[in-house]
Image (cartoon, rainbow, N blue to C red; front, side, top):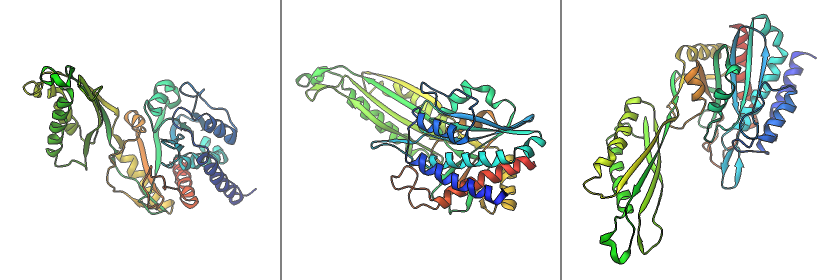
Length: 377
């Protein structure tokens, strides 16, 4: 069988994989059938027993040598009110990396001759917390031993098909979570003056929070934060004795994050004069850290893709205030997270967001070119 026939088989497999995974979505930590499908189609034993209670996810090595890179695809679907759905492109991510595995197996002798290997990571639970990436790193540290670089991609609806965005430095924001618990004193509505209204305390907290938002000239560009849930009270004729606010902070610059954290540290004291109840704060910093592309690696891969791949390479792009759990790998290793264009009018997580067959194969071609770079490097 010649190379072109082999390549055509891989392309057909990638599309078959994508359609199967897309129509059998499973949310984070539930990817049992997806994991089984990956194992069956790649026809090899995983290096790991899986993660979480359901033992989901898999890892494989190709080649032998002293230097290693890892390449990662996220296999979970988004949890929605209509059940799990692949609205974030993970079915394409997984299928394309499965195809890249087949391609590298066909070129394994070249990889080994160069004294190199590649670890393929099919990771569960990117969309939810606790994070699959963090759990992978904590559970199977040895899998990443000797890793020189790590790589991941995401489909990008707003880039044309045939383009790839490879930029230096931050690419996804960090995520902090915050809980504000407000305690008052219950009283029947007829005795309102004798109660301490927790809802009044919550209202004051929100107003102070809104004022803080207005202090940031880069709000919406380099930092965003908001309260997104509120619960309080027990009956319509009783002064609320407690209220709970939860929210999120997305940030790129440490100095901005510290200003927000400082606000919450000082919040109980700010309310002392106007609210006689108590205020307790729970602030979780960097549940997901900033995802940063190693500058030298980003430049090298961008140059290679420019001259070898046929992709239209963009070296600049707006930093996304979304979060990506690949950031946990980026904190420990030199990594690159690229965005591959799919030219879709609908954004990620939109019910109408789809990845075309053409765009899915472009993701595969990105991986194939990256693996060729590693063989040649």
